[in-house]
Image (cartoon, rainbow, N blue to C red; front, side, top):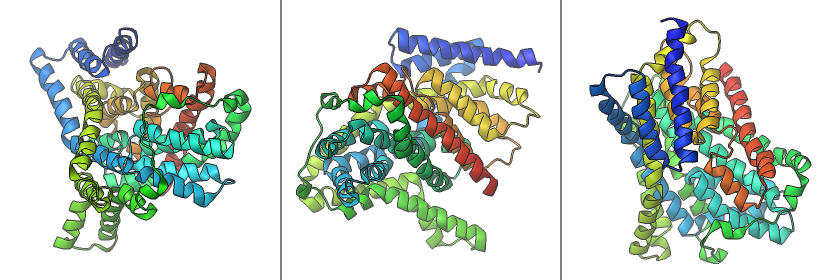
Length: 455
């Protein structure tokens, strides 16, 4: 196909993204409905046979949600049970008391990192803000001084670590081993959180000193359960419950590596470990453990525990539909030949597929706002590029995830949450939140490229 022929599908995608922005931002249409409308329009513009369009849309929805709906459902329940029992508060307060006033930022980063693995970004933010307010008041430090490290740790886990939406969905789309994504994700996430959190706070303080004088707006968080520390579960049991799915997935990955290194023949024991290391199984087991540790063991009636579980599912219903809508758009791009057009343009290019995935995800994130939708759309564009390439699939997942968190601005809910919670102006929010998200993205890519030399 000629260059002009290759450019036409990309022009259609660009127009599709513009229409999507108009529907969401100007007309205030729901993101899910907007994604499906744009998917229909793009499919028609790409010349897909009329009889194939609905099939493509349905397969995009089913293919995306088929393997992740259970993971998200169980993940939401687990996070809610830990939060509603006071486990998250216990984790945060214990670490803060242990680290002391001098190392308070590091305590906030570690607490947010642990809680961030179990909870979705928005939930973690709402849960931790009141705790951070409390500490800032007690120690007479700026709320933002603790808020930046907290938001960074939550954002890093959201962008790089399964079972969060972005990395989980992309791993499924790229057919990558989710355990390896988790292992490499940890290696990248820890130094990235340190650089974009405590270290960046010092820079931000010089950029916008006035932002560090703000006291924030606790009312913006809404109603959050607060507990007396003695009424919460123990620190050890809270951490174990929150991290249990990660422990099971990591265990299965280690066993898989040992199998490959030592050529261990398959047996029932290894098969069982692989089964419990699957994200769905790991999260189901973890939910059952949480029902006991966060409920039954603390004499909380089962009816109340299940009410928490039901509430958590209600809160992720729309997010699941939006992710499904992103999958629909992605499938239309693949079936409409857009991915092949991108592959043709970059055929013979020396550009690393890792950089390309990051670049496309970054452009889409800036245009669309949603990190998950940007990541899914990127998958549709770069999957054809990976054919015949020996690129590490787990690193491709992380590169796409890194690109999808860049430069959060006015079309992203996280931007407004951060602004309102900390009572910042637009300029201050751009100089703190938008900049820290960009640092996470760029630094994350740097560590991914570094890691690609060794794996």
